[in-house]
Image (cartoon, rainbow, N blue to C red; front, side):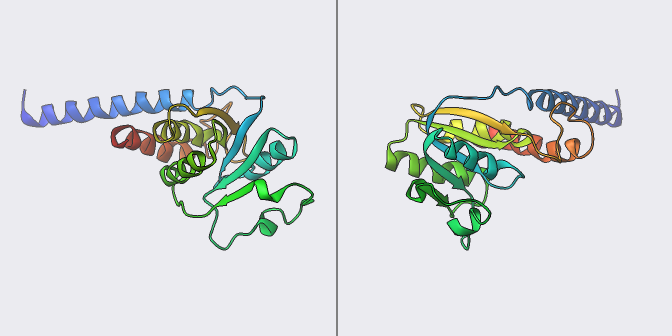
Length: 186
């Protein structure tokens, strides 16, 4: 076999492997059961539509003692988060985490909060397309005794029942690459 054929076959094999890994990743991206019990804290990862609203809804319904919104801009205040909501809740139990800029940094900063406040269980809220990577990172970074329950939020730009339509492949491709990057990194 010539060197060129070997290179082509190797390239094809790598592409086929990546394609099947991507399909497996995409298929498993939508398999999350809703968690409906109470946790010590609700952790919302910013960056996707509907996440913060779902976290606030659960907090208002007393699903956790604390609400932690991770990755908010340094200029954000509670008033700006709750601008169209009634603020009759205990805002002292709401934490705006402002240091992190990535999912990994979210987990590192949440770990500090969890350890300081002796939090034993969290409900992690993010979008379906982001949950696989986020849950992997949080499970690797948080102490093993912290129970992590997942709640994936449906968003208008991603149909979890038909991930291959619309923006689905575009949203999943970087998640796929980042997921495997973190698998090798942490």
